[in-house]
Length: 235
Image (cartoon, rainbow, N blue to C red):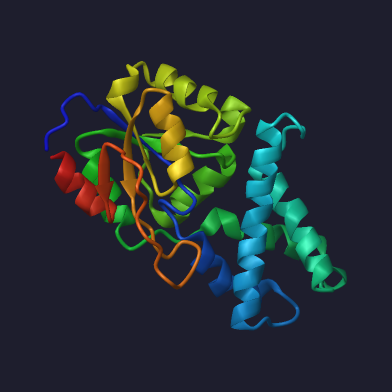
């Protein structure tokens, strides 16, 4: 299908472009003074990610003051380490290095090749709640060749607030139907859809668990299993 009116693709990052859960579980023990079991690592990673999700929900309900994702991650990390009785064994340098695992998340297997293919035809960039330095460092680490980076600290608001989608379109100098959000999360896509953007769902069934999740029932413009497939669909 040739969608000639689409000129720019904006990507959710955490879970869509990079595999945060696997990266965390593979690397946490390098920094921790006490080795955690596989099940403990899974719990640690998911709880850490949930701290971000909980904050975003509260912030968008006007209940919390603005913080960057790095700040959110660090505050949640300290609470988790306290719960594991590990915080007293970790100095500030190690704590900061541990928090920056999020700057070095591994891409999914199709990510780099798929993005490079899509970049040949479309302008591609992030539409992430992550802060700019986090996304920039991650892009360098994982060879993500973005044309632009839209981050939470540019908008001072967080998805799924409609302001973020609409402002991204404005910055690109395009019409809403010329911009498409690519994401693995229904709530993100539904908000983009309500804001007038095109939507592409990419299935990442192992983002949260080793047991594959099912595809959503919601109707988006495109469905795919990876970025390479999305490139074929759009060309």
